[in-house]
Length: 238
Image (cartoon, rainbow, N blue to C red; front, side):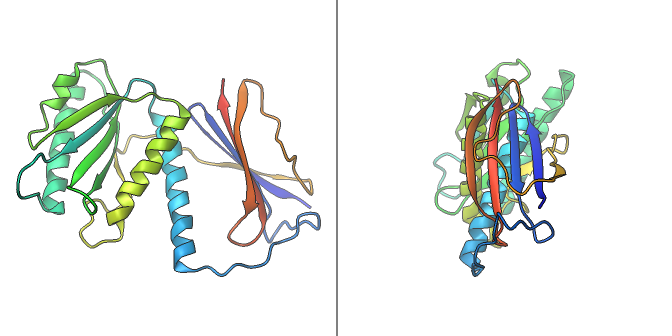
């Protein structure tokens, strides 16, 4: 019986997921016993989905030598309230956007804010256009700013995505969250979309064969929330 093959390409990464559904069941791929969906289990599922989505977004839009920023509010006694911090961050981003526009380049960014387990601070990933770092640092007037070069490898995107989601998750479900979503981003980013097809076969290879020019980073197998088997394979362009 057929299964679904979903392919997402983002930068150097190609994610291929194969899975059965209620529509395309296979006697060779029996459905697992139903698992009770608890709030904790659903929260973990949502967390994994957000990490994967952000990971692909980073891979599709950022590359080696782009910039990773950390913005803090120094040692001042009173931290800004979340709404105030949001205004400070937005003002900072507007200044960078204006600078980039003068250089004839459009700013791309992803930002998150953490303020529950430690002093409030922001993290940003922005595109580099070859200007001095000090030109960007000077716009942050509220405390310490640290700027690092982004290495641009798929494992770097995965690590930053996991960190961003973990950081934002501390306050995401709170009333005082800074952003309405897990992260805030510019509207000009490329959003990788899956290309799906129905494969008329009852099963798939345990170890997929990568297309020419790619190698397999890892293969993960298991069952979907509905209890049907799946295989997720990440391939990276050589």
